[in-house]
Amino acid sequence: MTNHGWNASTEPRGAATLVERVNAALRTSATPSLTQLVLRCALAVPFWRSGVNKWDGFLQLNEVAVLLFSSELKLHLPGGPYDFPAPGLVAFASGSAEILLPILLVLGLVTRLAAFGLLVMTLVIQLTVPDGWPLHITWA
Image 1 (tube, rainbow, N blue to C red):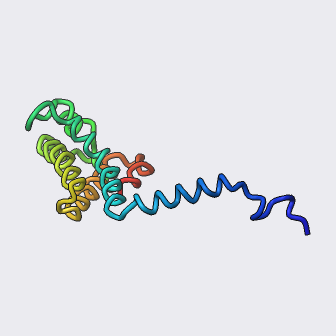
Image 2 (image 1 turned 120 degrees about the horizontal axis):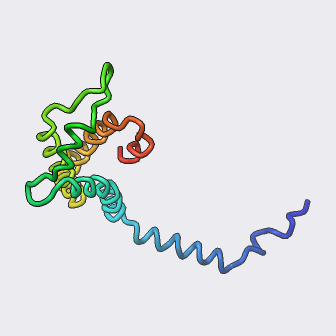
Image 3 (image 1 turned 90 degrees about the horizontal axis):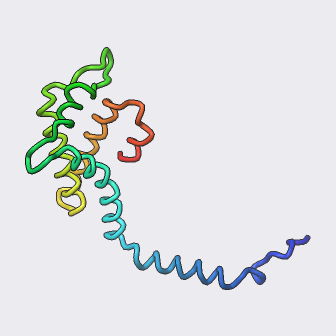
């Protein structure tokens, strides 16, 4: 039986050493706390960016955010779509949550509550933009 010139003794030693070094570096640097921080940051970024875009200053929603919730965005529920109730309040609440919850998540403060809040926001976003589920599922 021929092995076409490939066996463990003919493997390039430099490539194996490089793989071993990368593997060892990942094992020592990818501690559970660092991995959790990276994952929390990755989850926080899209919500933070969306939240920042809703504000003109401290506690000052921009007009576009309120306009989106009052005319553009609809809840796609059975028998709908339906308008958001109290669009100004919903815009303020979502803008506030999109700033506060990612901060709590990244800092590791009440992470379960923050993650649950972001999950609820993801569900509402999914009901608002039903065709966006391939992207939204990555947030859940």
